[in-house]
Image 1 (spheres, rainbow, N blue to C red):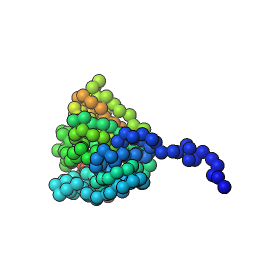
Image 2 (cartoon, rainbow, N blue to C red; image 1 turned 30 degrees about the vertical axis):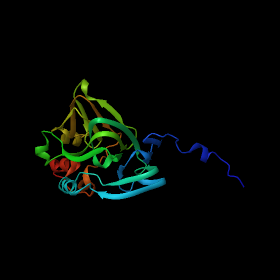
Image 3 (cartoon, one colour; image 1 turned 60 degrees about the vertical axis):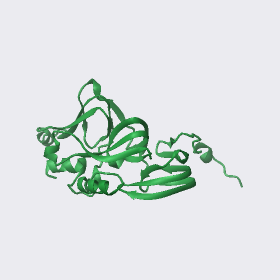
Image 4 (cartoon, rainbow, N blue to C red; image 1 turned 180 degrees about the horizontal axis):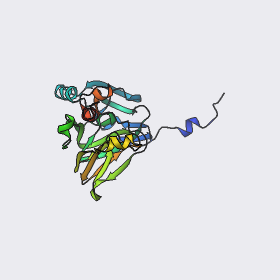
Length: 245
């Protein structure tokens, strides 16, 4: 007997032939005919054709050492072959950008996939507050190609050129080249919290030329040490050190 209902028509595969295209807000389709791509380890949900996967871990010994020291980084798998690859990360929303000889600084936990032509590394965030926090680190993605990142909910891109911009460190996902970052400490934040205020003690400040992407959730986890509840590296770990955990 035939199956009735709109399930298969409402959720048909997106026919786009672009290298990176949304299947929907939470599922990304990658056309493998354009060369190798790197995707977050464990992010594959389906593929059609002949796609091969190679676990590259932290991306080499130097990056492994940096990741171990800082708590920041990204575990990726190299994907090669022909066909279509579908990736996702716990039903988070996916944002796609195209870099043309450019660079973005991204929370490592938010990196989903990027073209094989994109180079990534762990870099120290230049901020006056870093001396107090023991070091702040992010992942830089540089070159020409596609980058897909995840956000919890629909983000907002803030143009910092109009003046200083401030954001909760746990909501910041990414910023573009030309943006300068720093840490702003509200010394009255704890008193404010005890008196019934917001208690937002630690914020990131941004200036320069470019955009900062923030998500509508204060749940950004920076680095594996922060995720494990340790005070080691990464932005959250550094901020935890400043607070004394």
